[in-house]
Every structure is written in C-alpha cells, then in structure tokens.
Amino acid sequence: MNETEIVDEKVDEKIENESDESVDEVKEQLIRLAADFDNYRKRVAKNIEHDRMRIKGEIINPFLDILDSMQAAKNAKYNGIDDVLEGLNTLNKQIENVMENHGVIKIEGKGKEFDSKLHEAVGAIENDEWETEKIIEIVREGYLLNGEVLRTAKVIVSKRKEGEE
Image 1 (tube, one colour):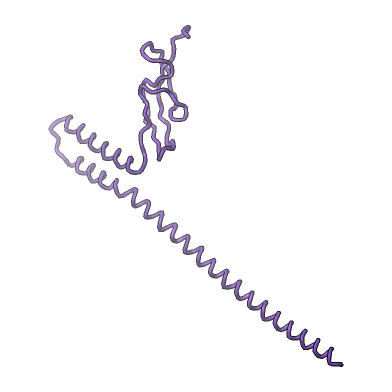
Image 2 (cartoon, rainbow, N blue to C red; image 1 turned 45 degrees about the horizontal axis):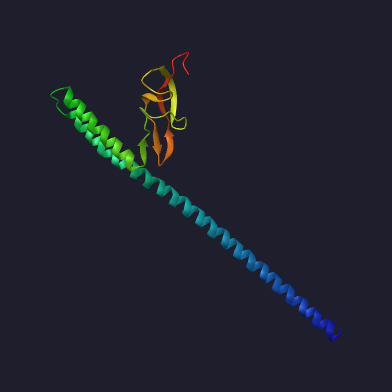
C-alpha cells in the first residue's frame, strides 16, 4: 500500500466513525424530542380538562344562588297567590340575569317582522289588525348566544284573509 491509499483508508474510517456517531446523536435527539412532545401533549390535554372544569364552575356557580332562592321560596309561608307570583317573578328575573351575563338574550318577537333565521312559524292567523307576516304570538321563546341563534322562537304569524292580496 502506498501513502495515498493509507491516507484514503484512514479518512474513510474517520468518516464512517463520525457518521455512526452523528446517526446515534440524531437518533438520541429524536427520542428526546418524541418524549418532550408526548409530555407536551399530556400537559395540554390536562390544561384543557382543567379549563373545561373551571368554565363549567363559572357557569354553574350563579345558578347555585337561584337554587338557594328556590329552596327559600319552597320553605316560605305565603299569604296569597300574589306572593307566590312575586316569588316566581323574582326567580325568573334571577335566571334571566344569569343568562344575559353569559351572553344569552331573548329573540324579540311580538309585533316584529317574521324572520326565518330567528323564528319558526308554527301557525298563521288571518288578522285585519296586523300586517302580513307580523308576529302575533310567541309560543316558545327563542334565544341568541353572543349574537348567534341558540334556539329559534316558535311563533304565530299574521296572514292575509283568503282572497285578499
């Protein structure tokens, strides 16, 4: 073997040794990266579940006050039906306040123009007092959640008498 061949052989050995070391380093880095990612995924899942529970608590907590009021109303002594109705109105107002604080508002209806995005017509009545497709009665309240329809309102609308245009 001449000098050139010996040098080439030593260079090839060096490259092979370095390549093996580099591959091992990359493998080790990938294993660590996979473990870090798995830990990150578990931490994020745990944080999401914690946030869900916190949000549920924030929603449920105001209803506990209403539950307390209902319990007090159940145990109260009433002098007449007016007292009962006043208590029910107070409870209703508490519920409406909680809903509004969470972005839930009633869809306006009676006397308004029928809107198929907000209302579901469950009946129509011929009526001379109202314009066509005006809401005469609300059968079931509808609600918006932060401006989006949560539940459409079921309504009865006016219509023209047969034979009229």
